[in-house]
Amino acid sequence: MNKASLFGTLAVLGAALLGTAGHGADHVASVGVPAARLITEDQYVNTLKVVFGPGLKLAPRFAPIPRVQGLVAVGSSHATMTAGALDQFDNAARLVADQVTGRENRDFLITCRPKSNTAADDACAQETLTRIGRVLFRRPLTTAETKAYVKAANQNAESIHDFYRGLAVSMSAMLIAPEFLYVTQPTQTVRGKTTLTAYGKAARLSLLLWNSYPDDALLNAAESGALNTPKGLQAQVERMVASPRLQAGVRNFFDDMLVFENFETLSKDATTFPTFTYKVSVDAREQTLRTVAAIVRDDADFRDIFTTRKTFLTNDLGSIYGVRIDKPDEWVPYEFPANDPHAGILTHVSFTALYAQPGRTSPTRRGKAIREIFLCQKVPDPPANVDFSKLTNPDPSLKTSRDRLEAHRSNPVCAGCHKITDPMGLGMENFDGAGFYRAEEQKAPIDARGDLEGVQFSDAVGLSKALHDSPKATSCLTQRMLGYALGRPLDSNDEALVKSLNEDFINSGYRVRHLMQTIAINDAFYNVEDRSAKVPTKEASNASSSVQKQGS
Image (cartoon, rainbow, N blue to C red; front, side, top):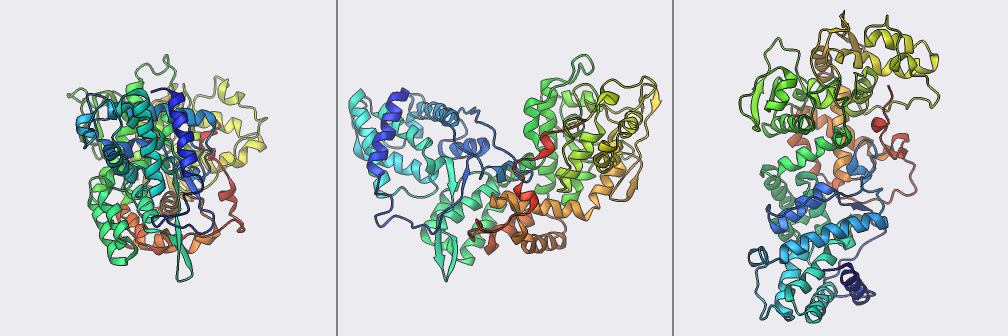
């Protein structure tokens, strides 16, 4: 299949659908201007594996989505489709369609058989495209859409004398259609209130809980109208929360919240840290996600992510932690001893290495990350004219990072920001830039004392305990989860809902599954408001997280 035939098909589809999408009994009317969220890489992969099975080979590399209020999920509603981005989606679509219709896969991925492999078959094309389109578009295809996609498949099949190649062209067109690449908000008016349609609810619900598109059971509930009833909605939410697929939703939320896409560009000085390999970097990310997912799976206290000594290790990670793992290339459950300096995800390599410089530590980066990721507090970026020479080319007499930062903070321009980052970041100084534990720096003892919001601690374990007990960390998690669920920036109009959800979260014993379920059955999760005339908060106006613009 070439691009000329694909874009020719798009032209045919556009002509066929122009002016018809708003007509017909199967059309769902929209009220107002719906917001749209661009599909993420993970959602793209998860959805196609639901449609075509886990054996599908997928390795898409789409343009990064900007962070808004600390989340890519929120930034997806701000993402734009450039010509270059569309080309990336097009390449991925053609690779998928080629696999599905290829000789090695077609017999079990395409359920019908054409009368002839070298000619069009209207019935088989329609059966295949309507089945696939229902999942990709998160609703049944309209009559006009069905006719257009089937017509395009048939025309290409007759032109190139290959039923499956014709089918692949229409399938590729579906995979780059706005109805697939964007999650819109189809709305309806019920008793004077604008809310999502049942299919809109299904899409929002599946993205929150599974980070994927609706399955057949959820689409059936939408089609029957059950999802528009409290009982039907409750039944679907309970089913989805009990499903193993909830783990995908949990992992994606925390991967997003923890800014783990920065691992894709993480590098360490090979001379300073020769054992910090790419494999260590990959495993570090996975270690933390496995640790957090296990806490959620066991329905334990969310705050335990800051203090748990239970985790998972590989042989490569064991070399960083000083733990021997005798099973190469396998994940092994492991619990650090009570007197070990490792406790909670702040002491994981995923945090200590990610928030450090290539060749040294960075208390400022680490403190900034703690404040922004876990406390939802914005730290200003350093002024453009700041002199970092006392850190990058320090006085040899300044042995430790604490000493060097004290000299750097002598500049009053720097002191204000460092005051809110360094007291936390210095608590992590027993871990070097690659995550190795150390008691000394340049033969000088490390002083890891600090404070978090007035709570004093003497080391990283104490810092982790202070974060565990911080009400701001709990409130931040609630804010992040609601923003992730809604896929839009929160503003002052959401304050009452955040407060109510947070109180319920606390009363549940800080259970993340309970928080997700509470959001999923809340009417506010499905209401649609026109906020164009409302003034957002200062944080909502900030279009990208400063976590990626790290200072010293």
